[in-house]
Amino acid sequence: MTDRIIIRDLRVSATVGVNRWEKAAPQVVGVDLEIAVDAAKAAAADEIAATVDYKRVSRDIAALAESRGYELIETLAEAIASLVLEQHGAQWVRVTARKPFALRKARDVGVVIERKSA
Image 1 (spheres, helix red, strand yellow):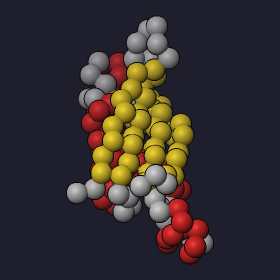
Image 2 (cartoon, rainbow, N blue to C red; image 1 turned 90 degrees about the vertical axis):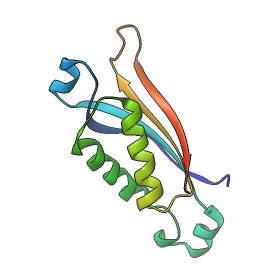
Image 3 (cartoon, rainbow, N blue to C red; image 1 turned 45 degrees about the horizontal axis):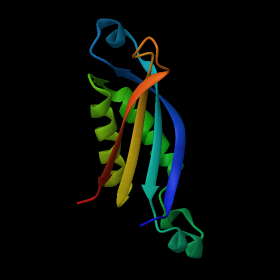
Image 4 (spheres, rainbow, N blue to C red; image 1 turned 60 degrees about the vertical axis):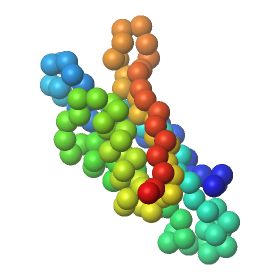
């Protein structure tokens, strides 16, 4: 499927990291999403029930990120992908999760994963 809803630079508060200073307080993590949808079907129905509610997705991701600490950014990205697939009915998702200040000479460090429903 080539139709996608995109969310760019969703900023969520999360405790992510292996270092003591990273675990001491939540930090802002940037999340990008691409979620496969049938845009033609959604457009024909012209109602939110026919597509993925991106406002609800963003709220759920924020709640997930704040719900616990994560050692790895990969673990957070996997949890986000599972949430979108299992709770929002997506067939496919691409998640990019970025952690700022992980490297002194880089703006951020992150991971990109793609997952599809079983």
